[in-house]
Length: 178
Image (cartoon, rainbow, N blue to C red; front, side, top):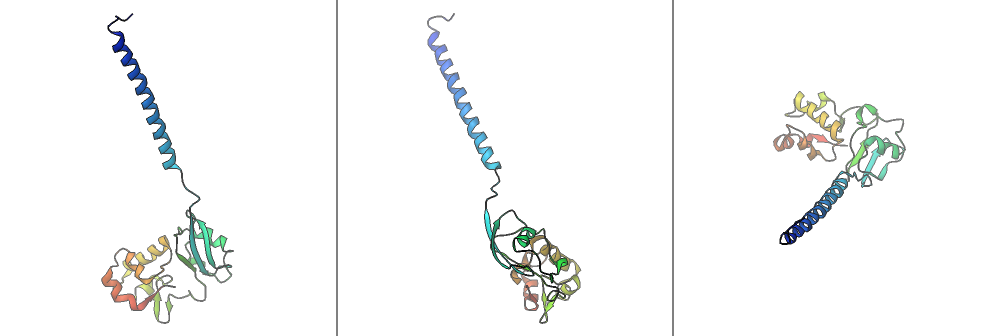
């Protein structure tokens, strides 16, 4: 079939072809393996959070990282009878190292504590009492805490869109977060 002088060339082509098929097979296998690893969701990742306030068992909890405030509250034995539920965003994603405070109807009936405005519970109108905070910024504060959960430190208010260092300096002595 092949001329005698062409046999080494054809043998080389066949060996090269087989090598390429094996090489392509190994590459495809590694790609599939890598795709499977990158799409695996690591649901076993645990975080540590603290919950306080109107739950039956306040304290530190280790919980899966993909859980929400609702799950943490269930883990902490649920709400007490004094919870101020309208101020709680049950859909808040949990973050490692954070403390979540569940307000009471007694201490969160107003957004003011000792003359300072509690940025975790204040109403739109109460937030607007702060220097440099109008309706838009006050709503941004409320939207931020509804999305990300309660402020853990008053300086976190600078994470709110429209509130920078200058505004923070003007209001920091008039705000608290509890």
